[in-house]
Image 1 (cartoon, rainbow, N blue to C red):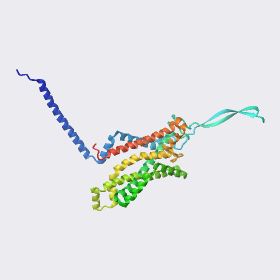
Image 2: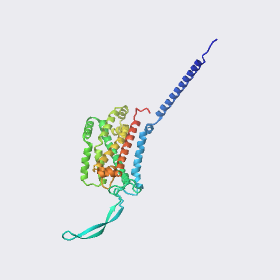
Image 3: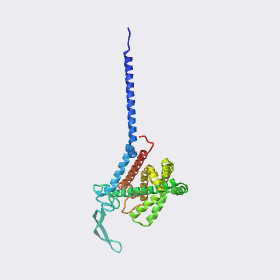
Image 4: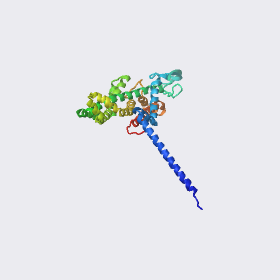
Length: 363
């Protein structure tokens, strides 16, 4: 009699089936990878950048933060019942009885007169949060929430204007230094080195003190602050552009433009600068947070905007006093949170753009 082991036959059949399934799964994965590669090849560079950017959760969080801050700062005041410099002077008159002693020449009390004294008190000075004032009021009876909105306008506007101005200056000087080289490169780079060696914050403080001594209005002072921060911030952008131009000018397509006889300005601004834009966009986005911090620091030290014009830095400056720091947190803490959210939002967006524009990225 011949005995056949059925278990071995079953195991062999299962191994054959599993190997066939593995082959099919491998072929399916290869087809999916090929389809993804073809999809990425067919995508335009801009669409691919957006796809990579929105895959990052931090990038989406940063974008939402900045959109909310802009809506809060530029559209929020339209729905506020108070203006930026509008005080809510709800006063109350308190009557108290005061005893006055009438004395003779020797100081003996002859009789006592009771007088009624009426005192005026502002009920909205440093008022606590309520239904009327959601974040309370400050020491000048200004609504804190409304001042927070207008302060965002100042801080965000200064940040964007300064970043745009420093980028323009950096692109012009860095592009000239990188393209022409020689003595032009040497001269511009020595100027850049000088600005890099200057301690930025102390110089900003000195310049702001000089401007403050001129007794300018807040609206004019804002423009001077923008100019000062721009003067001491453009050198990093110029160095970045110069390094990229030195690399790109040796490429074949630049040699082709020279053979075609294109003018110099067209080679720089049409063929070189557009290829530097990805790095510039990332640099601008990350620089916005630094500019907002600079403005807030100057305002905190009393050298930025002041008076009726609110900014996040001036609102934080109220916490210098111990009583304000301990008992009136609602006056200064919201402005600090706004600065933190703005800087985090811009940094998240900058990190997302840097990863999305990385040419070595495969996904």
